[in-house]
Amino acid sequence: MSTTGPDSLVIRKPDDWHVHLRDGDMLRAVLPGTEAHFGRAIIMPNLVPPITTVAAAQAYRDRILAARAPGSDFQPLMTAYLTDGTDPDEIARGHAESVWVAAKLYPAGATTNAHHGVTDLAKIRTVLERMEKIGMPLLVHGETTDQSVDIFDREAVFIERHLHTLLREHPGLRVVFEHITTQEAADFVSGFNAQNPGGRVGATITPHHLMINRSSIFQGGIRPHLYCLPIAKREKHRLALRKAATSGDACFFLGTDTAPHMAHLKEAACGCAGIFCAAVAMACYAQVFDEEGALDRLNNFASLNGPRFYGLPVNTTMLTLMRRESVVQESVTVGADKVLVFRGGDTLGWSVES
Ligand code: NCD
Ligand code: ZN
Ligand code: ZN
Image (cartoon, rainbow, N blue to C red):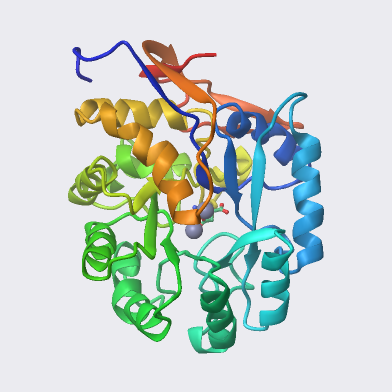
């Protein structure tokens, strides 16, 4: 961490453009970590069963609003989960009624709760055409589901096999390439926008992909709490992501992909994918931007670029980050179980003023 520079940083209140809040006890346990620092969040629809209808999204939104702390003005921005059978009219109706702001493409089986996802992009052609027409963004988990492709190559192969075609066939579609993990993805997004003015492709970047590489997952033994999808890649990719996030390029914005799972489900013979980073995310981003000498660009990445992409106003209140060491909380209790927090027990150089 650099030892020079300001001792505090005031930025506009950030939003989190990629969040898994789950439901029930888990929702109530993890929402405080998100609403403490973020004004709004894009809520992922991969519940069991997934959010595929306007009615389900409305009911889920109501449960999130009811779980907020007293006085909280946190706003959940809902999304639709696309399947092979998605009806374009349902997607357009939810958008027209302001129930959801975007739709999520999970290639079938690509990640946690993605088995109802899309098996072939051709199956949702009419849905995408409609979204293009009404200006509704498509959020993409960008990994090929071809199991013969090495897990560390699945994002790069998705770009080659699917993303180029998707953007060519739908020249008006706005797309967010979610939780990018590779140099190829960062280069693709900035390169696409350089060649196609209008900024119709965005990308979210998580705090953990800025901090860990694939060796971290095996440091001293297997570390299931660092397993997420897309999986962390080689060090050169982490460095490329840090460069992209701190570049000032408006196409890159904050999305934590905070994805809580009960500890026993991650510490298992077949552990599930997802890293829980909600409450520690802003401290992590501040530390990374500080290390990169780019604290002056955190406001754009965290608080301005996302609203600009989504066509929403920026938040009116501010958030203060302090250059002050703090030990990260180890875990959050959920009923009789717990969820472990990213970097839990570690000391970070920045914290959010409370
Ligand atoms: C997410 C989850 O647990 O829902 N897991 C993850 O590893 N990121 C799903 C996702 O965002 O791909
Ligand atoms: Zn994903
Ligand atoms: Zn996610």
